[in-house]
Image (cartoon, rainbow, N blue to C red; front, top):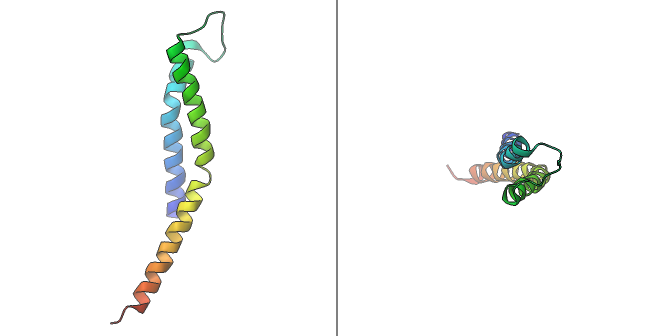
Length: 87
């Protein structure tokens, strides 16, 4: 359960960090396009950040389950190794 919680916390942190350029873009230019086009470099950073947030959010759903399953397997393996150890 700790691996699952840590995985989701890490995913949330990654989404928040990836969203910073998008939030900066919203602060500079607003959420709706007006009659002017913003600077293309900042627009590229803004769009790339939005795509990155979507990808990280989608990956943050299954990866903690994989990590929790791996942690469970390692725990079982260690318990079995400790039981079979002589002494």
